[in-house]
Length: 205
Figure 1 (cartoon, rainbow, N blue to C red):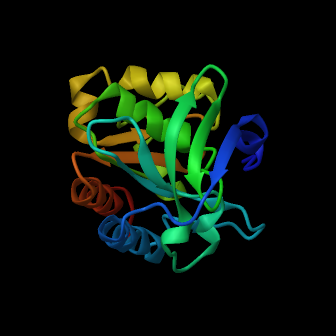
Figure 2 (cartoon, one colour):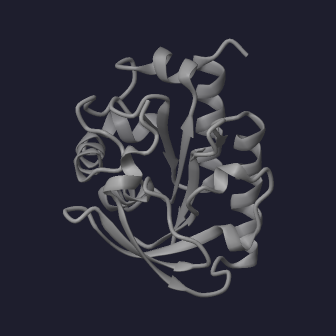
């Protein structure tokens, strides 16, 4: 797969600051991020390009905290590895964020989920070829013609979430993003447990 594709199309305006994530939220999000890393659902390829990320919505807004760009390279993350997305534009494939590092090119997929359903409060994006192949078209799947890091996939994801069955399942297979899967829930625990449930269902581990 072309892991650089989304990076070339995506524009991020970073407002440099110190760590922005509250300590209590960092502890919770980092716990789940560490569990995903231990299962190699978040990590980095041999060429150094990171994959996977995790986010939490700021209540009563569409802003969200998300693990920053290329953080898949780190076994352990600190508060400085999370950024706050404050604004985004699907048409321009761009966003604004605050923190020490840029937001991931995959942040707009998280934004599309939050915008589509106000009850969703957490999103986990993982990579796993076995899960992806076993789940493709058996669970809600985005259009394979829509590649990651593009406005098209964000809009397609939003369209899938209009279906109540998709919202109940808590999973979207990214048809145009080989290995990519999105999980979501009403809180971090819900999104995390959904990820673990499908990990057991879709792998032989």
